[in-house]
Image (cartoon, rainbow, N blue to C red; front, side, top):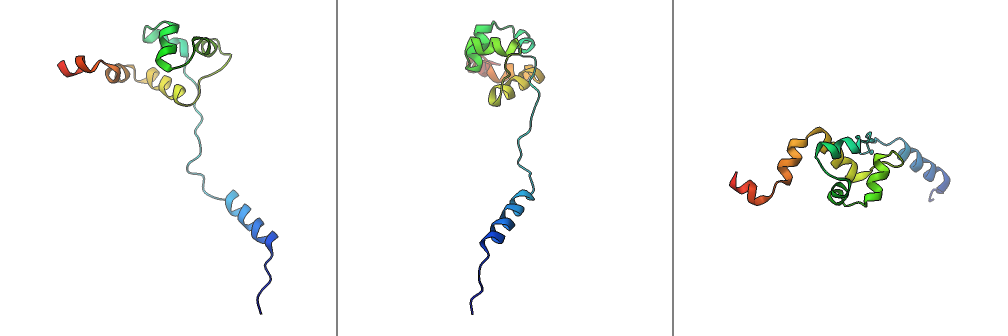
Length: 101
């Protein structure tokens, strides 16, 4: 004789297994660097920095004035620019200059 399935128990067990799973790939939250300080470190105007980050000048102004904060790739790039400015400058150097060096 076939056993009767208890769908509620199967769903509950699945939800509990999902809830208790290891969370090794969770998102990490980082504090945003001081956008204005990073921009000044690189000697860029607001317009140049906005173009470099592919955002509007208004967005950059909002970040600098604390009304909003950078997220995703922009936040990551700003952190790298803040912590490793020489590496960023080397990576962005003109290929013709780099080949001659």
